[in-house]
Image 1 (cartoon, rainbow, N blue to C red):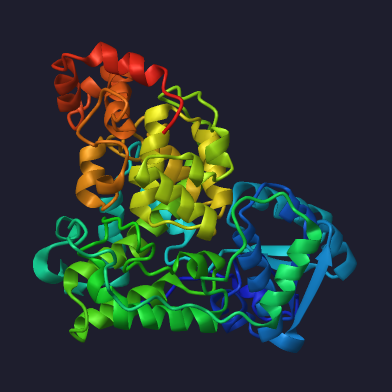
Image 2 (cartoon, rainbow, N blue to C red):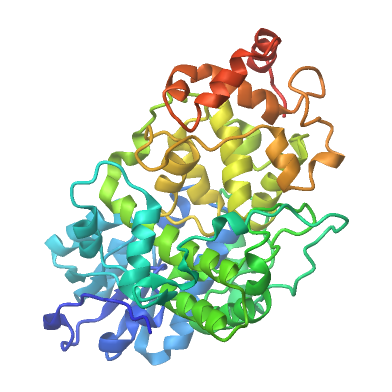
Length: 505
């Protein structure tokens, strides 16, 4: 049995101070338990909606989540609509209790509010498995971080997939079993469809209000695809565990053009809204394995995403500090092109890049391989600015809250921290995309070609990237072979000239 550690101090658990919930703190782990007696304050701040250029569907999800929380909490909740959070708190006229926010800027903000007397106290967040203090103890004086070390400690700490002191199956990690290419002669994975919430009157009003606000957004409006309430999150988790988890592992890293969800859980939104606790997802997955309803490789792979990677990104966000997004060790200075920032998928010829950008435009979501090995790889090869890219991922993705993207983009995807988080840059030529997707057969570009009008921009871009950073890559045991291969290319100069002038993808 796994249980979250909240770390709530006793001196605030018995008073009647109202509890202010941010839009990513909407689950019973935050407002239930020892806080179940409290009045709840929820705030819609118009200035926050206008502050950045968000995906339209992301704004819908956040407002829908807030308003559904107010509805579900009924007489216990007060929902205030104001220009700013400060205006709402001044209108409320009572100091509030708040859990630690999920970004550096929000944390500084609530501390300023506390100095003004608008916030009575700030208590640790209960929406993650591991408290921040415990991670600080784990991190100690480490200068290099590896997720596998953290993940194994998490498994031991919460007794997940363990047989005594040893991992179930005598292996910690089944990643090698979860890398199959998409099945041939199929256009979809042919698994049961994911849970889809039913929109209601609250969603209709949210849509009307967003139309009236006339905000500068990206992407298209569309039906709500993700759970925003604890009840919906429970149904989404149950459907995934019972019908999709058994198929998850094998094709976890595959891409299919006509199957945007494949067997992925689609639980990142309810997790990041706080309406689903990570340990509830982990426990449900482990139970499926113990009950012989899902294979170990699939269960371990899913648990590693939640208890390993997601928790790791959360804690490193705080550990690395607010200046982490300014790291740019590869000196990437190219601004995001307009077609990228505007989600203009129709301006893109390469099928893999077109489908990934189309997924962001139409749903505000793509799965992790499209993020890392298509969008992230393209940005890495072309030297897009990591700070702009981090902002883009945080605003264009419906699950892209402020804490999620810095380590994922700066560290994992763009290697802009120089190897603090990942041991090598993650990029590839067209051969990898051809193996792991069904895109290349219908593409105008040939993944085998690096030179010519039909040269794959990923294949050619891979060699241009390798050449640009050859000195650094030659010193890395995991990438030095790429430099050796590049040096044997007879047409390298022509490829570099071609890519330096490329203006279309």
